[in-house]
Image (tube, rainbow over all chains, first blue to last red; front, side):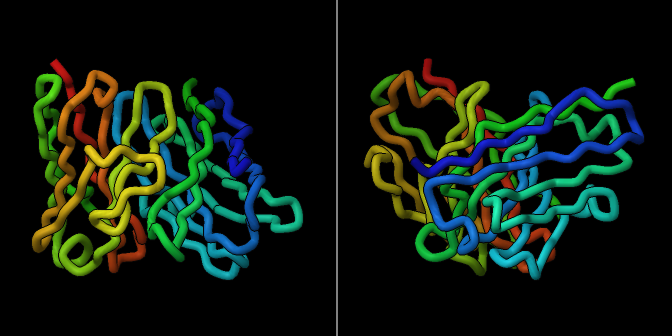
Length: 120
Length: 111
């Protein structure tokens, strides 16, 4: 079935790096732009980053620009989020999500999320 | 860029109807008919409930409906059920490089 599975979340110290992965299955991954969305404990959803279907375009939220980098490997049906110079305020559940632009113009598929805790 | 504005909480009794508002600006909600709504239960991933302002994905109850007027979108849930108790978020495309804006979220309590 159509699904996204995130991995890579962990407890890390401030200033360290972490790479998240999101494996897709059940749909033509290379045809879709993909996003990362995060949710700090007890807080709302925050858009983090986008990558186009072919990886040629990327956008990042101002709060992570210069520290986080989204990328993808269409041969492995996987999208990544490289997180450098992590801060305490980056602590959150990180979701990858498919934004369908042909019908829904919305995030129609979400992963289960992976928890990142930044703490000394 | 600031998030879309939603009330922090709303409540209703079983069988009643409630409406959640989502206010944006001339850079997002006002100019795009790409407003969507998500339901999130505790510890779960968000679920798409409404897309393109007023459309329901297959499998979503027709008790959920959406609308928009100017820079404000609305989600209405009729015939409230206990299982509707959750957090609800709106989103909209935006002309800025943020690409997608989320609302701050509304906690629905079914009394």
